[in-house]
Length: 204
Image: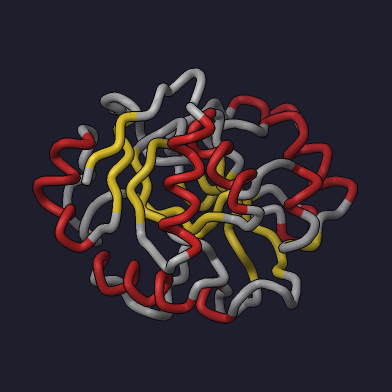
C-alpha cells in the first residue's frame, strides 16, 4: 500500500495512520533527507526481526535509528558536551552519529562495542512519525543489502512492497546515504562518506 503524504506539511491524520501500523509491529518505507528508509518502532522485536529478513542482513550488523530531537538522543546514547556541540551544529541533517549506547536500547540495535548510530534527518515526514510514535524509528536504506537503493516510492512498492506494511510517498529522492561519523571518546572519525559537508571537521 502506498500512502502519499505532503513532504513539507505532513497531514496529522495520515501520520497517525502510519503510527498505528508501527504500533502493530508494522514495517514501513519512508523518506529521509537523503534516501528512502525502511523502519519500524525500535522496541518492536517482530518489526526489527522482519527488517533484518527483508534486507537479508547479518544480525551482527545492527541498524541505526532516528530520534525526534537532541533532547531525545540522550535517552539512547551517552552524549558528552563535545558530542552535543557537534550534533547541535549539524542536526537535523544528513549525518549518522555513532555514540555509546544506553541500556534502554534493544540488544539487536547495539554493536558488539556497545555503540549505536543515531540520525535526526531534516525531513518533516520522518520527524513527524517519530514524534507521534514517541519512540525512535529504525532506519536503513530501502533495498536488499548490497543491491541498488530505490529512489522512487513506486519502485519500492513494486520490488519490496509485499514484504512491507506501508510505503510512504514523499516524492522521488536521489540523495546519497548519510555520512557516518563516530564521536566515541570525543574523537571525530568519519566511518562512511556520503551526503553532507565534511569541511567542518578540518576546522575542529
